[in-house]
Length: 439
Ligand code: GUN
Ligand code: ZN
Image 1 (tube, helix red, strand yellow):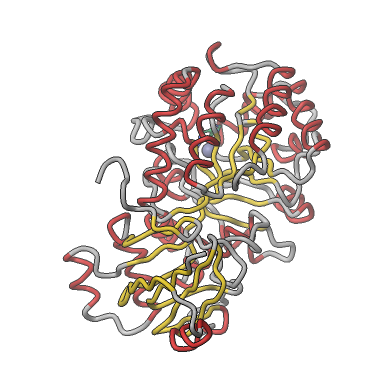
Image 2 (cartoon, rainbow, N blue to C red):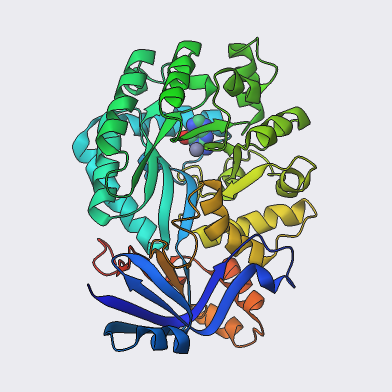
């Protein structure tokens, strides 16, 4: 089997950094290497050492110096059928859903449309250095089939689910409790564990699922306890009131999901902007994950995610970060963390660049309980990598002349970077940027 040796500056986190002085939270090599065999990272560290360990074996060497090699970015919440919803002009979440998003998702009943968008979706992931994403498909099984088939073709580690929704949306976007159950089961049987595919149980949110459908989601969660679950929680004030009217017996929004056994360490709750202390306690006690989607929260005017309040409390809540395409306005995790930084600035909190880069990589892998596979350059993990160029544009190159530290470099990448800063993306050890549909 061919060995590939990547040379460049390497950066990989081992835990959440406390602050900018916490240099023991990551491994950085100014002349580093990643050795890849069979789609896996088999060694990483100082170039001279990795090269010496290779001995007489031959390897194809690719020199990425002076660029930075990191684990590929992970996006923990986005909607694959919303690529053509991005940039839709609406006053708030519910207007945006009803006016643009639901009608657009109706088109995914057609396999050919779903397949076309799936091709573009994976191209954008690769272009932006995102090697794992957690996606909502549409309600139609055909959309999940198109998504997973494309993921399999590209050998990408993806988490996704057929959306379950049986009310408060157009007829063309509704299943029933039975259909939602049966089709999710069929998707699990057909796709889970095939290649690097993971199927997630995906009730869209409490507004679009009847109590009967929530029970169906609960039944699936019981039958398949290892699967991820994804839904939306506490994004918008009107959404919260509408939910309360639909589930009058629940103490609060989080309790709606708790009543159906949907809280837990594999559950990803999109948004979580307006949680009460009681809800945060419930999230913390169950190990549930609050998924922060900064560009979406600003674009839809949903609110400011209290990151430090969630992570810094006596009972901390697990947090991940995500683009939330198409409520979100960029596919780039760099743009995403730039907006996350600005939200924390407004809240009077600091989000340092080491924390940002931890969150896009190992932090998101931990939130998915996949840190043994992705988000790291550790030997034995998947060789899913991103190569970043801090001088990707003339303006970045000019600013890069005066940076003095790794923290400066990461902060510049976050503040000004986007897909242009992604010099290469490796998926299972193979360079993936060449051959994308649109250059
Ligand atoms: N809540 C329910 N569905 C959606 C969606 O598609 N996007 C966002 N941002 N929130 C939602
Ligand atoms: Zn969403």
